Image 1 (cartoon, rainbow, N blue to C red):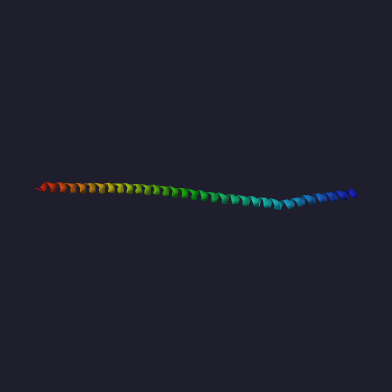
Image 2: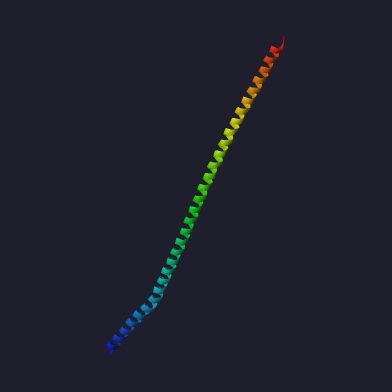
Length: 115
């Protein structure tokens, strides 16, 4: 009879341990699934933020290209202003040269008119 009792106790302990393990492992499985879902949602958020950053980077590159184009346009205008300034100086020099020639011609005419 003692052997039946020990056998029954061993069966009860085994069933208790197996049942306790199954009961204890169920919340762990649920926690693992919850963490996996959380990781997946964080991956989705990271992918969305990465896409947003890429869009912002593309926008910044477009704005940088626009600024470079405007800078090139401003440099071209500055060069044109320098060319126009040089042309005006050359024109002023030509006018001054013509005025000097006119003065010389007036002096020659005045000397020729003298008796």
